[in-house]
Image (tube, rainbow, N blue to C red; front, side, top):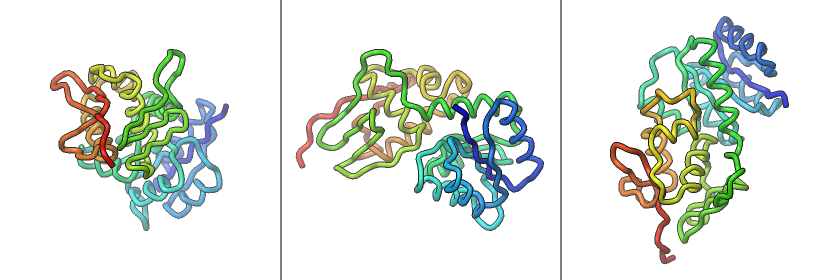
Length: 236
């Protein structure tokens, strides 16, 4: 399978550099230099991954990200010329970004992140017998159809958020360490990104928990990691 990657980047030098790196690894690359063209190219080409600049002329990259997320669950790798802060990560997660990188990024790291995102967008390996569904009176998660319902209403998760939730559901009651989550959800390329589990778990809680400040499902094991707890049946 040849993966198709859309790059939405208004700096022609950066766009050409990224395009060259991706083509060297046999990806099909589509370019757009501004937001409206980016959305149009997205609709025309149905890419497997979007690389999106945070700062675009005439429309902010966050708005473009939000629009793409309304149309698809495709992985979105957001780029910024500045150091990525936790606030920016949270802001990007709110509109549907999966990952961030500071440009220019070394070619090896860029390729590793692209591979990890494409791998992450696929369902977790089902070789072992594992639960394929979680359901109680409040939350329903079907790992086969990749659907999440809260009070019967669908919740949209990014591929990364879904894989994180699926990892918890497949290990009910088990404490998953930060390192294990980094390896299983993000990949070995991310084992030094120690802040990722905390930020992404916090965001996932806001989407699925009845009360994110007092989580029912994803509970802390302070200094170690997190565990998924089956909820007690709830009245309607």
